[in-house]
Figure 1 (cartoon, helix red, strand yellow):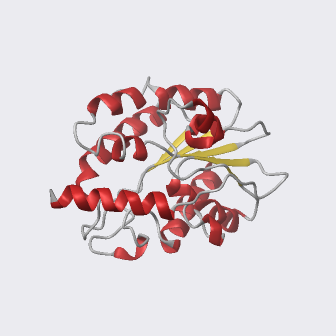
Figure 2 (cartoon, rainbow, N blue to C red):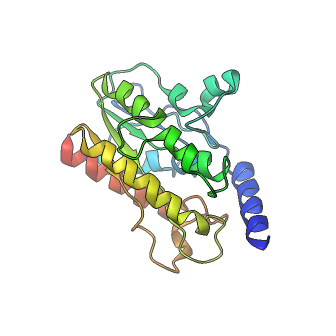
Figure 3 (tube, one colour):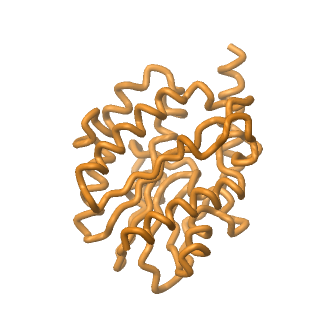
Length: 229
């Protein structure tokens, strides 16, 4: 019961604190970012993952990520406004699309408990089907390469998502298999980014990235883009 209360409180803080904005940071950008609050976090301070990518590569990134966004989302109006990640796409001459998503579907949708059916709907065990695989295929059809970014793990101290580790590992494995089948899809795991006991990579809610965490994620993305550009 205590763990459930902590989990619920953490999610409420996340929703209240993560006021992600749909925004662009450059008219001639060739990099588009789509996803949820892991990408959008720290955006109002111009220190989100996208801004870190900009700094590392020295070029603009258009960021359409929205806090609270889902992969699976049925409401049409708010979905079209960005709460459904696939609806965040905008036409452009994109060479790269940085993408994440699935965390809210697991944490808000099933509480990281008995999530097998929901994960299956997002991405099959072999990585070949599901909403995420279909979405990535659509993005690849535009000619862009896709960087799919995984999620931070809990540092093992007072985090509402500590019990989500197994689901996160399962989800990562499926995304990795999807990426392995297409040289234009690159999966970045963040499972090893946070040292055990180190709270500095997380914001106050111990779910989202701190400024340090966003910068570290952005560096990994930028290195991937630089290596395959």
